[in-house]
Image 1 (tube, rainbow, N blue to C red):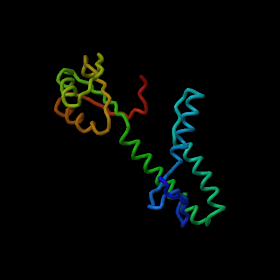
Image 2: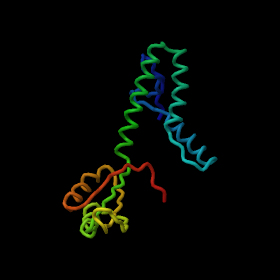
Image 3: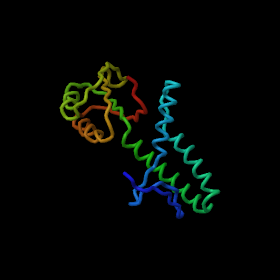
Image 4: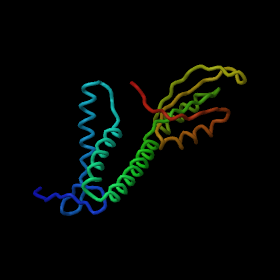
Length: 171
């Protein structure tokens, strides 16, 4: 407690840090407060990214006038690149995958999915123009379970499968 906090502005973005150099970024806290207020009023979920961009845009606009313009531009460029990379990486690894498997013998695949992935499937009757009567299995997994699912599918010959990225599942 009782630590002194000060702003650093040596060619980098202005951050609030304590005397040990640990940074505190309040923009995420600010964005969460705004999101909660917007969600209460509208009933819709809002993304954090636009709010962070607006807030940080204001900070950088002020930095143009208070600090060196070149330093502010370089900091803005680093911020945009870092935000884009982090967003793309987290979206990739946190995405939900829908695996659709078309097969004549679903029982073995269903059992392997239950045993190895601890997941369940939706089973639907389907009909293919060439293969005739089939069963279509739909399973939802995360990115880290995808390799195991591919192994299960490869052990069961005569299957056709697709993988799609799902933005959101409503319950």
